[in-house]
Length: 132
Image (cartoon, rainbow, N blue to C red; front, side, top):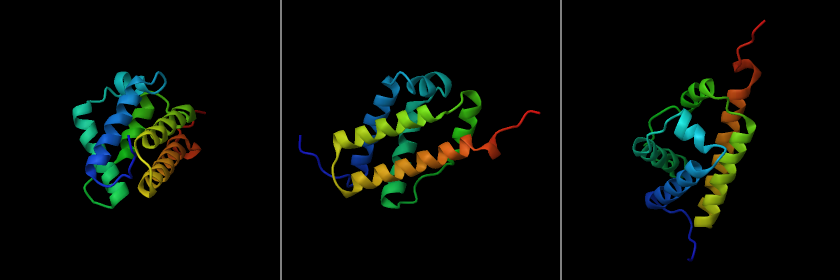
């Protein structure tokens, strides 16, 4: 199969669908999505299509606040460095398996920045409740 760059929403859909199939099968982070968050894939995936299309192509179609969602999830199960690293590795591998080109590299950079910022905010000492 000849790989092309990510060029439109159909490519985003392929990426997101393939990525979350890999996530669901992953022993480390799959249970966070399926057992803890109990993700409704029929609702979640279209949101992710909008999210990544907004991020990559600058289309203002995504509605939501992923930070609030992940703060709430972190209260149910701590989202630690290992989970973020696994998420990033799966995302990068999925992109690399399917696509090649400037947009493929850009979406990996964006994913890295988003995951690192989210990890920092969730695990920052200022956001943790201190028990004295």
